[in-house]
Image (cartoon, rainbow, N blue to C red; front, top):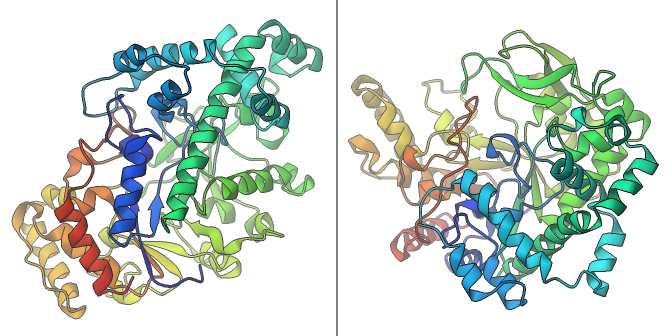
Length: 495
């Protein structure tokens, strides 16, 4: 990473407060960025900003380079004259968790009203469409709207992308095709404005790239030769991980497996284009499931769990040959890590992740203990995939709590940190924040839930489960007291 010591906060855009059912790229995002900058936070980490798909997950998108239309700020569309005050008012909803069903039902109706008033003959929009960055996405979503189902179920001419059939699709449903381009046009404009504002404040954005893409996506539809598919374009093997800390039967993600030999024959051009697009969108990027680049775990597509899979060799460092901005990548190296992954990290020079919640199993050589965390790493109290600090403490029975508190207290003392640790989780979030900031890691990142000391009612995701995830939202921006406390901690540890 090659930088001075710094601090970051993890909070996805969807988790921001606001009136419209989900966080957006609007005023609350600007206020949050200003709040971070004012209190010494120089990195804002978000989850993938993509259009969500199956399970409402940002890790299952219809297009890996898309922007999520749900995050488009409606008042901004009103200022452009595309929505009326009454229409924006009607889109308001009660504060609380994200209701994706309601968004799917109602939000696109509002966005279509905005599109109906949009001048799609304008030079900027025409240039945007001509650029072609979202051509496959717009065609895919047009076909999805018109024909429904998975692309594997479409007419053969569209399914196998016959050029004449694609041109007919674009022509016969031209306004629908332009609508999906319009959504990406508006998202891109709003995101670029927000990112520029953040950067001007001295706040950099850390984005997130899922290693895999969704089976029913524009990515697979447009590039079937790059995936392990059968003659009907259905996955033969799917991605997952074997049983681990997060799931006793492993995690069966269902994403199609890459045909890495096909990628290599093309000089990894698709992946390099994806990385380049991400580095234009964010200041830094976290590659999710980095271990799959060294060796990946594949499971038969008809398997019910991920218990009976096999490890295969990945592209390793060849994937990053010629990459100019290596200092802008963070490797998510959690889960089942072996010497191969460690060697790949060393060869690439990418910093890995250290999660303090994984540190207290009683092993003095645990790599997540503060004393074992080196400079070229990013230290987290926790991630979006595990308990909040306060939430974890509440899951412990009496005996486990006593042991955990004793271990944490010992490490606090070793690091000169003195915080009272109480039953029910009180004191633990601040203790973990202080420990993260005290480590030698170049960057320490704290989920906003741990900044605020929230329990597992604020947890973002339970890996290996369907439904009820990705819904957490702040009811209001972090209060003055919590942020001032974070600022003092950041200053104390010279970040």
